[in-house]
Length: 401
Ligand SMILES: *Cc1c(COP(=O)(O)O)cnc(C)c1O
Image: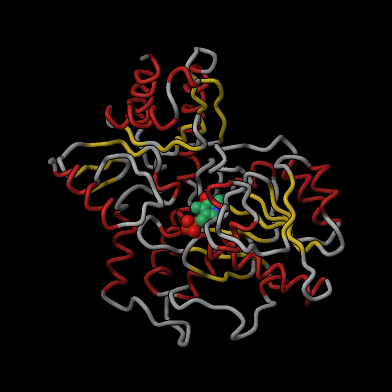
């Protein structure tokens, strides 16, 4: 058996099968490239679902992590540590908000957002205790905890994980009228992805996010934007909400915030919202640890210059121009997205999304399919233009067969 086949066989034998990875076993990576255990090189066009916006083993982020590794990595929040204040201050400033509540994974940020909105609803808005409602969108992806899958519309994500957490109202994504009908005096928040990544990189109709902002402001409801995948440069702006000049009440951040090095997530909001938490009411052993803060602080510093956002905007324009040329040519039925982020719908005659991903892998390009017929393209923002063009050549070659 090959090294690759060996590694896959033992992973299959000793790990739960909650994923179906492409048959590639990565050993090392740098920038936009990964190398497998047999020395083959692959262009990473997925970037860890945007956790790797700054590329693999980014030298600045590794330097920040290494420096912190030799100082202190974990204190728990029982004590202060000297990286915490800087991280929270700088991240809050990047978001134009007052306060940060650091957690680890994206799902924890969403859970924390749900708890924030409920507590705000009871203590600030005056909703009767136990009656808070949060309005969410169909086809959402917000993570995998039992509460979060309670308001998923994806059967694979939800089935046989009940009983489900109540208190959520699901409306079609992009439909302002449905949203307006769903909001009641007991509604505490509207929770949305400004672009739905997992659903296939769905960009809402123009004016939708602005409409959500106006409606939530009028009805005294928090607008919580899950920017865990769409945020931190991916779409050509720091936040996808900026494309409609919208500032939500609450940002939920994760993925790229950890620089591809450690899991770092956060809820970011003003004092009138995050101020609802008092000592003992919420927490996390690892949330806001020194290593996470050191890496997260460097991520924020890198985003402050705007260079990654600009790169994503420029290369993204190029990516979408090239992908749009494929639409109508037979193999591609639609392309959506913003910046260096695209959902490409494949005509079933040319294979499923999985089959196209497999054929791309054989040509040295790694992408991920979603919902059967779609492939997602989201390379690290540090990808070179020549590499991006080479990846697109491979896609054209795969679709020509
Ligand atoms: C990935 C993701 C999450 C969950 O993040 P985890 O770190 O996997 O828990 C939540 N929301 C969105 C939009 C995501 O893309």
